[in-house]
Image (cartoon, rainbow, N blue to C red; front, side, top):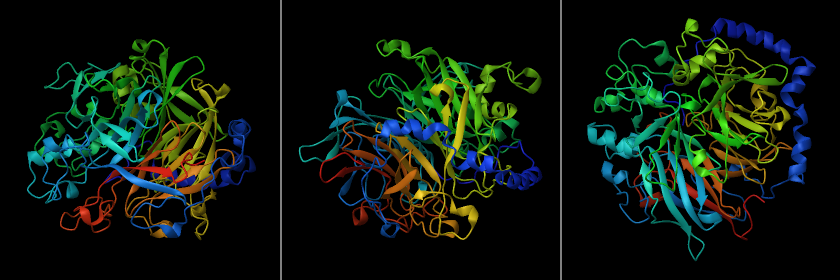
Length: 632
């Protein structure tokens, strides 16, 4: 999701100091040792990865040319695609179907796929590549499309419909005899929305910071919203991540330092929920924002289990939750905080994952240590624990207890001097080498509000980059790691040296979605804002895209181009690699990021063309005509 109106909320740095440090950084970049650390020392990455790949080029498809960008899906020669499920399609594959004039009620929307598909996962039935559960996030709503007349005549009915279009869908999907994927009926089909009851667990549950008049125990929140990227646990549950939650809340009175740090203000993002749902009026309900901004665990095969907000993983603008295991079997979760100048976090569980005792895994995300990353200029890094009483997280510095640290995670990370990054988004872990990659989408305030540093070496970073690190001893629980910049995104044809980048392969900018398949292909997706596409630094790039990347050669090869105005986000594969699922979010998004209901097709009519009244976000399936694995 692009930010509607997200001002800088990290106040650690003086802008004048940032500019001074920028000039000092230029001297740093002239150092040969620094250049090696930033642009290609490898720290032994390639040696280990080569043993995994066994070949220089893991993918064989022909790159899709930039010139083929249209208001549609473009995939390589020999590939095909089809829509699996779009906003408004019935989650049981039957009814209720979205009406042409979108007059559906909130109750009907709660039985349909929500808006703006994002993170996702396929849960196969007993290892099957032909049927399973499809779980998909619905990040936010464009109320200009959701209602026939947009935000005119605003009402409680419209607020409820918007809330119903948020959250998560769990649906049964199956490949039919002709090879087409369909949404079908099944016992686990359900929607989780902006008002579904969610349990609150972990160290902050029940604390004074989460208690409200309607929930004095502080253990039951209504709804999950702004569901962005995701994660999947070894025990078969789904993690949905609440990102830009501040935009739904409005506070007219004086904003506290805690509210300012998460981005609460008097405007919000213009959802206007607070007009008819007092939960989102912070003047009346000051603790309600604290009940959002979490990683939420969902058991897709247990509809009787409420979603659980896991407070041990911290509260911030979660972009994703990448799960791996430490050498001793403890669970490790990597998480990005998607805003300019924010941080990367890691959670390590206290107890070990038990593959044969599933009941023991139910609390692994409740007891553990949350840390934040610090990237040093010499290519070394460390994880700093965010634990009460340690590293200055004491009452003398305003940190009353562990619950406060977890609710106000950003303030705690500020205190320990974590490294501010350029919009940390999806994190991906190589399936065998265990190297970790994080997408840093962009930051036009680098060098202004934030000093240039080794981890963010370009001022006015319009193009973004990807960092990777290797845990010491290749153990995800080790508090030390070695890091490098994997790629600086950019356009080699750009005349501005700061925008050229160092890509090997196809041009791209604003990396966002990252995901490794089990073969070791790094699938990379972009999120260039609709107002920037085809302009300025992105003059040659008119649509967002998806790439396959080789961790050894660092080649990026273009695999997919999305429709006009869309973001390409979310990806998964069936166990046999023969079907790929990809989400296309907000096709036809206007530069204002909210559509005009009188001209809903002004920028796109994908995917239905003349058959529907507006563009729709959707999951697509991709396969090879020759029946071989995708990408191979």
